[in-house]
Amino acid sequence: MRSHAIQPPVLRACPPAPAAAASTGRRAPPRVRGLVAVAALGGGGPAGRGMEQQQHHSVSVDDGSRSPVREKPLVSTIAKSTNILWHNCPIGQSERQNLLGQKGCVIWITGLSGSGKSTLACALSRELHCSGHLAYVLDGDNLRHGLNRDLSFKAEDRVENIRRVGEVAKLFADAGVICIASLISPYRRDRDACRALLPESRFIEVFMDLPLEICEARDPKGLYKLARSGKIKGFTGIDDPYESPVNSEIVIKMVDGECPSPKSMARHVLCYLEENGYLQA
Image (cartoon, rainbow, N blue to C red; front, side):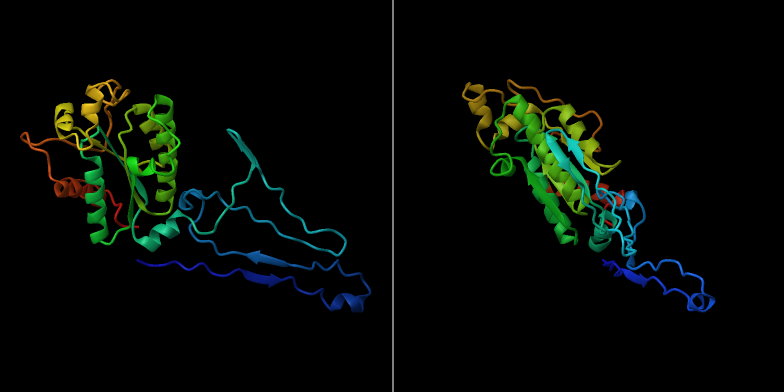
């Protein structure tokens, strides 16, 4: 892995007025005082900058009679947020990816409760770590201990739950990290909205395609039993729908009536990452 150092700004002073102007008696043009900063930014335009916007440069000129000339910042209004300004940074996604030696992406694991989402997420995280790659797991239950603790399991709160996780996952990917999001995420439109947040191919959907009866037989948290007895309402797969993906990059299925092992599932995803160039910058 290589670190790309950003060169310090080259400061160029404006040259003094020519000496010949004094001898000829002609008035020299006004001397421009100030420095022009030329930053060596590397990475080119917005495509190499990740989430960062292309930087605008301005030159401050002081002729002794006016204030420095500055561009007026462009503020935005997004939803309920007003007068907000995007702050640029000369270090973008491509530089972070070069530092880590990998490509930032989101691996979105979806499926019924008990289908093995968290098991796969942890196994994959371990495999990536052991091979020298930086990954982070966003687990649905873990996030409800903090970031999403104010959300219930009602349909509207589930939508917000997925939206928040999608935005956080996007930030991890922009940082060059392989982000593994493990959530039931039952509604197709919400998963597609998260996919739309990322550039082409940076969202990798993994569908844990295991039958409901297998997931219910496992019932690691005892939730299916509570749902069947009516003690839990709106439980996915029982009295709330799960909309299966139609275009997942990876599908995990039973083989000859047997569920694949955590290591074999992780290797399946790892092979996909290797074949598609995610494990190199």
